[in-house]
Structures are given as structure tokens and as C-alpha cells.
Length: 103
Image (cartoon, rainbow, N blue to C red):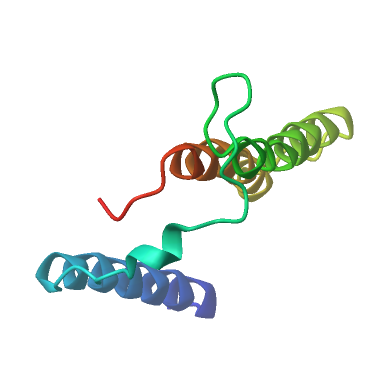
């Protein structure tokens, strides 16, 4: 078996083991003061406005990266997945900062 196949197999095994281990672990208790951020203003009906809006650069960089990949014809699966992931951080983090809680 080639080193590449061994590496890919090992990566899959570690990933699957980590996912299975998560099902058997207890939730991590988060201190409620963790969710107290510097900005608590509501602007335009958006609570924690600046904490939420500060995630827009992730979306901008993700879309710009995808555009550049397309423009320079360097669309590889790993590049596409990376920039889609960067874009999705904007939505996940923005959603969390809109109403932070431990649930």
C-alpha cells in the first residue's frame, strides 16, 4: 500500500474514532459569563449588533476566494471546501452572537 493511501486511511480512522467518541462523552459545561461580550447594543433590531456584523469579513473573504479560484481556473476540491467553510463561519458565528447561550 502506498504512503498516500496509508495516510488517507489513517485520517479516516482518526476522524471516525473522534466522532464515535463524541457520542459517549458528556457535554462540556460552559460558564455563563463566557457569553458576555463587549457589545450588547441593539441596532436595526439586531441584538449584539457589532458582534454579529463583525462576521461579515468571513463571508467576504470566502466569496472573494471562490471568485479568485474560478477566475484563475484553480478550482480544486480542497480549495473550494476551504473557502465555502470560511463563508459558513460568517453564518454560524453570526447566529451564535445574535443570542449567545450554552444550549
